[in-house]
Image (cartoon, rainbow, N blue to C red):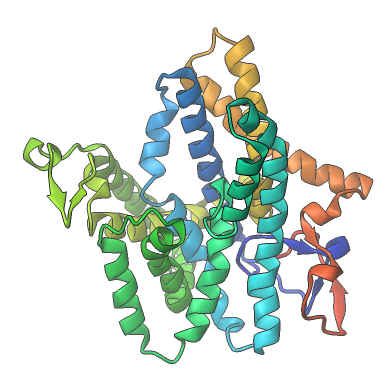
Length: 383
């Protein structure tokens, strides 16, 4: 097993990264590979079902993954923060803020350019489209919200580093439990997700110990996974009692239809599900035929940034020209298209040498440039 720098895997110019190369932890990449597939699956499935005005069998897979899909991504993103959080502010800000905002601004602009004609056809004026573009600097846009909020988490964690970690963890957990729905995505997602990021940061030694335990106790880990799957499925698909669902409110907020969405329950399932993904990833990393997940995980941000276009195109084509396919199968095929389409774009930039700025931050976008450079794979993470 190797050691890795975590975080979305975005490289530097011409496949180079400032600083010393770090080996990777296989199970971490497997975990990210699993999570990015679930992220694409969610957007693909819900998009297909909305367009078709019907529900397919993939809807239940998405629903099962809902409690742990993003919690695990954020937990993994905090795993290696302890090794870099004490770096000089200038370098820390470059790697943990400027780095991600470069890709957010770039890909937000690309998405607006692609989608603007259809928005204008739907009745928006060019001025309204531009106003919405400017608003996206304040209110994260579409699927890109993850890389918008991640730098905020990095800065927050650095600023509260001297406060007792138990206090921060308790406040973050309380924020997740409370039904905070202000309509401002930054506030809502910070409240819902920071506890997992901070847990990854502070509990990293125990998480790595757990992964090591799995390697030596595959049978026990498999049984634990089966028990978790049954429990997660029960909580995810169990509708609440009628007296709670019609209509039950707390702090003025209508409560979720399913048990998994209730305050406290969602926090428990999110943490438990993140642990389950770690168990699963450590288990499958033992088998060479699952190596595609490791590769996908090491390039997870490539998929995250670029899947929207092949997803949308394949959805339109399949729904129009393959009416014989059921909605669930269409959703699955759109998911695969989103993942492969994004990777094909990345491979094309490597093969042709054009468009590397799409996935590799150029020198002009760096605010801190140490003299020492060492060639690294194109999609290594920012340190």
